[in-house]
Length: 310
Image 1: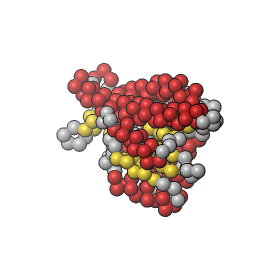
Image 2: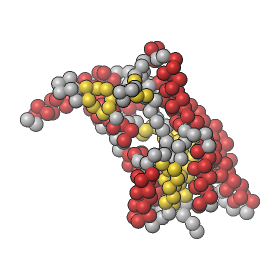
Image 3: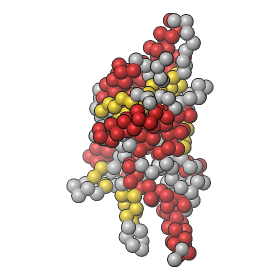
């Protein structure tokens, strides 16, 4: 018997890397996908082979390109001859840099048409179209496997597709609405895929992470410390907000926590068509509308702790 196979797009760093490691640790052969991080991907694959004695295939593909998602899934299926879990994790922020490398931020009603077109193209090509196409191809192969099992008179094996989306689908941040639009659209695509996959024992769900400490959130946020001028990263900014009460769990997430959830959600045969947040309770309180209040409270509490420690 061959090992089950899990494909994870965007898995050369961050959440995706944590997910392929989690599946490999549980006996899956894995597909590590990268766009520009070939060396990182090869390093992760080598580590997985060494530590878990499973196969790890690396495939380079920029999923923003129309045919790349199809080529990625085709390569995985051609190599392993099966596909049991497909996880769409590739994504990009909507922010665009100016000529000086600074992030350009516009509020919803202020965004120039030309800039909006650039932002929308950036996020829709990868976050929505790329993920959609990956899901299409994965579902095709999974249905074919199920049909073959039915022809042989065998029980249909459970297979699963998981889309990594975002809490930004319902928690709007005024300076990056296009990002939320791309994730909300992907949620609807997931619902359609779940309807099609169900009769073949294929479950399709969406995992909606909150803010997680990854390379994506290590970029500058634009928030400057009022005392020393330090510019906080996105992760640091949301950690401050969490401390200030933006969510019941007063911290941001770690990639491994999302990976555990991804493994669990793809192994529940009676759950499909669900949008599940793993966000420390952020959407429970909906921290975005009161972002400044939570930031100020987080800064105050941090200053208070620093004062006690000096």
